[in-house]
Length: 300
Image 1 (cartoon, rainbow, N blue to C red):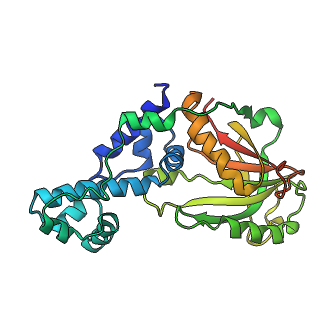
Image 2 (tube, rainbow, N blue to C red):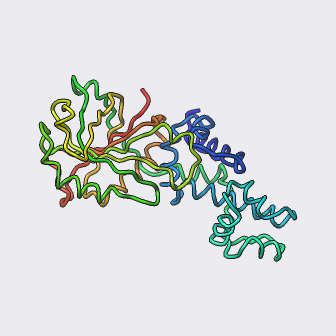
Image 3 (tube, rainbow, N blue to C red):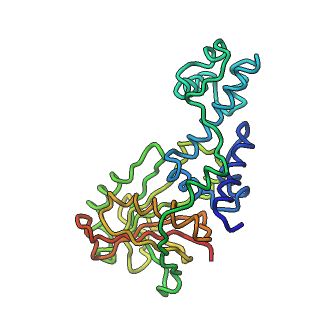
């Protein structure tokens, strides 16, 4: 199954078949034979909304049909479509359809405004294909250095709704001079990966860790690690390395390219693993020539 659009469709089919069941990243991964962690990012880039938002809207759309076509209690329908209470169901329903479930039932007809239909094969083909092709450099960290990359830095926890990364960098920059044996000028922004995320229901509250750090020459002793910091070792594996030229505020454009243009036509499988951004000694964020390298883990 080399066509990425086919894998995308398999993931969507899995979602459609499980709207009244628990939908996890692991389930998506098994159904589509792709990295569900990266699928969720691809989905967000293409559709302009999070995977959890799409699932919630599809559940509400299907629930609206049940409301109109049956006399089942609203609470029963809410629980069937994975809402924790009738109150939570009503709030979400009103945001999407601009009326309550009770009023829709009284009205007796489906409301097209707010209805979210399932993604079709034609639409998936349309949004996935097109654009230019620019191949990244494929590197293996084992080939570059005899030792692993050892990072010392500070960590924060984020969700799709709450991004603490800018504040983390501000705190880290003020304290990084406390780190011993660091390689001057190199910085890493690491999107940490926790396998436990794969088994949790897909929601906007799924957490991911992020580490802002610098590389050090040797593994530090525990007493050498500044307070509030941690040590992290970047795994030696194969990466697709993309180069972003320009300010960090424009970094999203490069990620758009990676997920929208390169990935669908590359025939490459991403790993469910951490990825990171790297800056060398020559990085300055205030010029168009600034360079950021984005390391995405790929299967060998």
